Length: 315
Image (tube, rainbow, N blue to C red; front, side, top):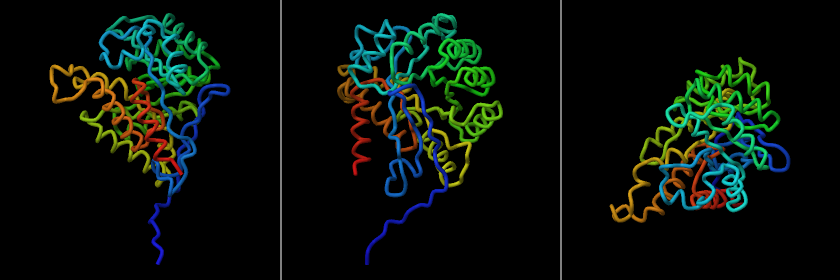
């Protein structure tokens, strides 16, 4: 008697979203089964990794994270080009750290000019990430949308408190939005409904469920993302059938474990390897939960994740 693997029947499908322009545009989503369940359905577009770039020199990065980018961290354009040319980045995520009202508080016009310079200098899709301050993000991201019309940027985070104004700009200037909610499936669905009611087309919405690294609540993130995929694929919940973006790098590289020097606590192992492995493992967990786009920092962590994805999808 031949053994047959029991298979789940899926009635839904994750939407395909195309971002960027030209030959280097990227399509994400399209899954018809749970992540990497290739024996049950299709995964037409493998998960994408966006390499992180900051719009101002990072002051408190761990030495291991800073090392691959020495000499370019004061120039976002050069930094982005290095990610593409030296490390094969297929997407760039520009973190607008300098616009934080509690930090440099850079103005909207100046920040948008930086975004435009980066967008003009690269040919891969560009994610632009604000500070999650509703008032400042509304001002900055609306100006970014206007100045970068036609670039098909991915703009985030878009939250319930600022979705109307940022959403209207995304519609008018043709950019994709990242709908961000605090680790709650119902809030995620609600925000997607609000964006739809506003007139944002389904092909211009992606989900940011809010994520964390291993040891810092990742099991809860996994559960919420898993429920999103279950609702979208097996319950035909159209408002949860969007690709998922995971901004994992900022969460991983701020924890104390990546900053403790090797000599201070030898039991934790080599500090460089420690940080790389924490980022890689966290990222892989999120991919298994349903992540479609990962924002990552260290080239070696990215290589580990790429190798794992290749192994999981090898025929």
